[in-house]
Length: 283
Ligand code: PDD
Image 1 (tube, helix red, strand yellow):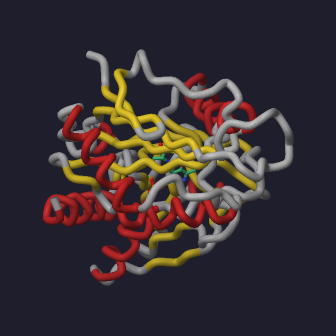
Image 2 (cartoon, rainbow, N blue to C red):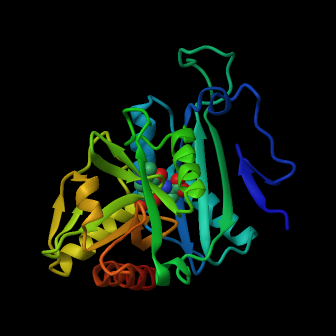
């Protein structure tokens, strides 16, 4: 069934929607995006996603295409028009269309594109089994904290994982895990400490990460925000990932080495349950 999408002020059937071939998102990956999950027709953690959108925009000296309340009302209009109960709303802002030039144009009007996508997030079968990951060099640029649409390196990482028969890739820089191809990465040590890389330019500042670490802290779980090595990951008691479209998913093997007993660990399962409960309470 054809979706209704949003492009620059208008709703259109997905086959009809158009943007310029001169759009800098297309020519230079000069654009940023956000993915907000939708549960029972309600956006999850959307304020935080919009806050991060502004941060990405300002790091690139790009103007906001609309106010937050306008953006949120478009998101809800798309949810309604597409009868989306569970899934995601994708939103992308690019610098707009201009003659091809590496310098930013002075006067381009930002492009705003949004669409919905159905996805089973809560009853994800991978939550029962856990996912498998392989490690691969992190070949991305140096500003991974800006959520740009330049996603070729993570796509390549995902393909490496797929060809190795794994669900996802964890990216490695100087012996340390940075993050997953499209999610934040965590291990749990023998002593029960949750370890995840600290915020910086090396990783995306995950919105789900922020919410889940807050829940972990409130549950008196111990957290260390620091880099961890591939060797630590291989010998971890548990491992898991977080993202808007996955929430919390346990990792059951890393480079074909079982994590713990090779089944989803209790801390990952507890955090997933806590986050789902918090999200359902909000919706
Ligand atoms: N990905 N790290 C990377 C590299 C990501 O692309 C994402 C999100 C995350 C998790 O961030 P959040 O919790 O805010 O979703 C971490 C989205 C879901 C995507 O590209 O589809």
